[in-house]
Length: 112
Length: 117
Image (cartoon, rainbow over all chains, first blue to last red; front, side):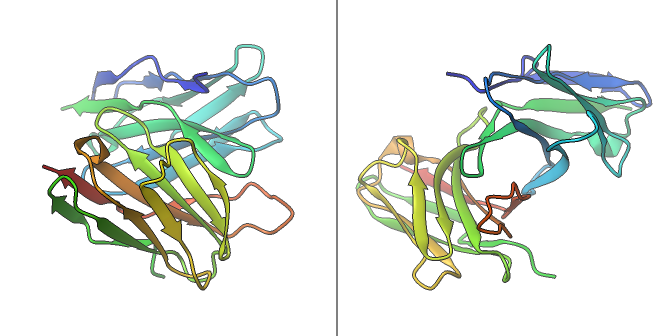
């Protein structure tokens, strides 16, 4: 069964425009949710995470994600994107013994 | 502060050959993970070590795959009798987890890209 669904494989957006990358998860138990970013020719880097507490989590570079239990979503948003945000973004859920289950990724392309 | 390192970064091999990859985790991290990422997909979990103990293996890890972490530090992933379907990026990650099962951030290495011809 698919644990994480990222419906948008590619998202082109103009520089300084807002963006939302969608992520839905399937789970009947408590989940821990993550967004990872992969810049060209680099390894995966953690962008932000939800473990507990406030449902709105933020990264240091302006991204935020909101855990919505009723909609089983953890969408990633940024109000104004930069060229440097061009990358592949992966949503992931942690289950069991710390194993991460990733979505198929969304390629964000910021257009000058 | 050295991150997770993986060697080699690229490996091209002929079908039927054996290959071995190495992962050096962040030094104080006791947990080590292997993932596989194919084109257009997210990483898929393969196996996980707590210190030197291999605690979990995915069904993706066929009997041609073996992973070790003999001293609880670096790890190796060996694929025997490689097949074209093994072509992928193999990612290693480590985390500093306590035995209490705390959900810890995993730090990923740059990966080893395997091409089986």
